[in-house]
Length: 201
Image 1 (cartoon, one colour):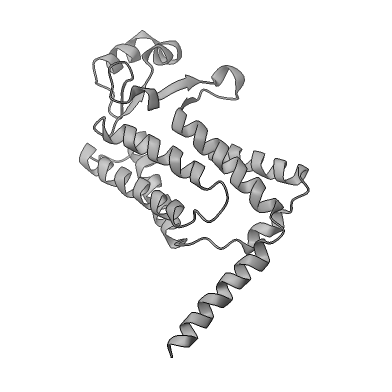
Image 2 (cartoon, one colour):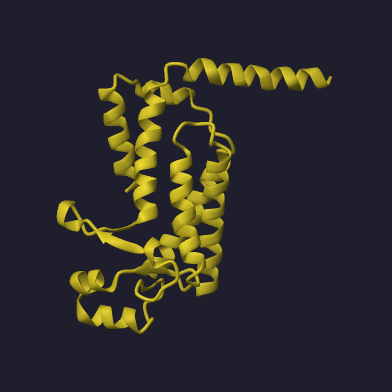
């Protein structure tokens, strides 16, 4: 729901008389890592689709790389207001997977409702490759427990971390759009950096 969060953030920012053009002046620290994280995430999607015959260890490697890169980028951009919220949400999801052998806990009755008894039985028997039943899982309160498909366009199951990420992205986008000093502040920061470099010589 990242795209939806961005759209809602833009709508709220517009209502608050913010300007989308202000995002052009946003300076993201370690921005090249975002591209690497995206490539790694796409690899995970391909593996989930089963288009490539990757073993689970390789899946875990890409998972660790993706989350690590995202956490690093968010950590180095905590100077942006509300950026701590997506970081907290990402870390909640990552920790939950780490303590469950890199599998995502999901509420079994939701799987039963959406995909039927056969899939639910496979989940309970731990035969679903990337998921385990939330019942009995470590830190199961951080698993995929919230089904909102009844109020949405498609079936979607969220964790508490997902919800915090969603709220965080909305708040970050609308805040940046309404930040009248974004261009000035980033220009001052850039000038200070250039001055320090010149001073060394």
